[in-house]
Amino acid sequence: MKYYAIIVAGGSGSRMQSDIAKQFLLLDGKPILMHTLEAFANAELQPEILLVLNIHQHQYWEELCKAHSFSVKHLVVKGGEQRFHSVKNGLKAIKGKGIVAIHDAVRPLVSSALISRSFAAAEANGNAVAGVKATDSVRIINIEGKTEALNRENLLMIQTPQTFAIELLRKAYQQPFRNEFTDDASVVEYAGYQIQVIEGARENIKITYPEDLEIASILKKKGF
Image 1 (cartoon, rainbow, N blue to C red):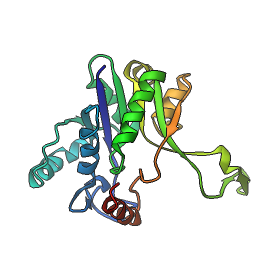
Image 2 (image 1 turned 60 degrees about the horizontal axis):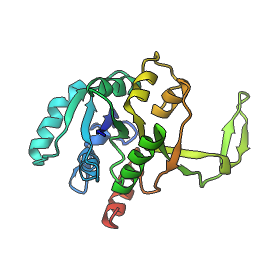
Image 3 (image 1 turned 90 degrees about the vertical axis):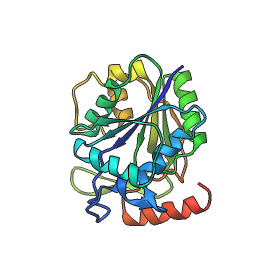
């Protein structure tokens, strides 16, 4: 069986209050994106890594790799207009069958254990999507603008990696883009497949706001 990882790096720096795209911000001295690629390169199954990146950032990334002597082997693929199109471009770069994990570039603390469990579960069941139970109380805003309480026991916070048999994912991505497609699981589910959720990890945070970068640094120092 062949294993692949598509790292989607299309984020901007808007919510990080930065002119630099968040995947390039430094975490403990090197870009967040490098930590993410290293996590997959060091995983037990050592998947082939494809980095999907905005075409205008390719040269900058190449310069960063030289500056940090970054040697993790990976293929850089042109990003698309939406995340949907970026993943589709990544899939086009993969020939043949296998298992592919789709992962956010700004989740640098993904563990080798979670990566391995994702590949194993997807190989057994066709797909595996990481998720954790909600811990905060949650409410939904209805069409009248009022809020209603939801039972958090019935909710999951979805993470990446989201891992699939390549043939299944290819079929799902033959659909036209819809605004409802917020992640790969939503694309696959809309194509008629049932999503299999596996337990994610609390420390597998997505770096979105400035305080997330501080939290990630603390977690790394604790060995995550």
